[in-house]
Amino acid sequence: MAFTTVTPAPPLRGAIETIWDWVVDPGDFRFERVLPQPGSALIINLLEDQTRVYTDDEERRCERLPGTVFSGQSTRSFVIDSAEQIAVMGVAFRPGGTVPFFRERMDLLCDRHTALEDLAGAPGRVLRERLLHARDARERLAILERWLAARFAAIPLHPAVGFALGVFSASPLVQRVGEVIDASGMSARRFGTLFREQVGIGAKRFARMQRFRAVVAQVQRGCRIEWAHVAADCGFHDQPHLVREFREFSGMTPAAYVAQRGQHVNHIALPD
View 1 (cartoon, rainbow, N blue to C red):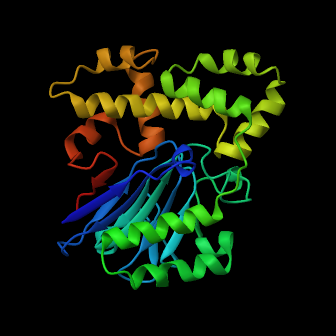
View 2: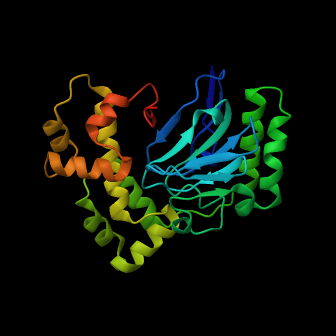
């Protein structure tokens, strides 16, 4: 297994958390549930020119896309298969970080996977071919970073959106949403529209997702879990409230997550 990551140089660093390259020997086939998290991603399948995404329900409907896709801000889990996870690259955009790269409204791409060529045109079509001709992970990462730098435009987040994201990242408490809107000097309606266009979801849902992620992080750190304490620490009214919110975002209960969690916090292997 080889997992290589780079943190891009400025100005990309303000929009992108990491660029990564993953190569692993084939193993037993399995489905994996991918949990939502703040931010969007670019995923490039180097093994085959196809991306398969499944609905997280009993029907498990499959959507087939080209090998390079943009994964918009997710608010619910989805399912992938491990057969695609042999040679993959990705870009993890920070919340709102796609504004300098794509001209689309992010709320139109929420909970969707979109072929990169539909967003970037011809440059999106040739990117994967260039990566396939690279000698190693280091060269692939350099090619991908240069491609991103060439697309980068100095289009900043609106200051009100940037301020809100800073507050929500610092605290998972959803009660702060009203305070943030008041501090922006905008009407709630204007602020909400702007936040959805640049981040992909509304401010309140984003804050709720931050709170959900705080639970995931706390569970990953602890061996013995006291759910009442977790609920209180992460700003939930009570334990049933935590369970409802966790299930809405992840498609599973907190207890099921604990039982099925593995090495990778966002990928949960599904039972056969």
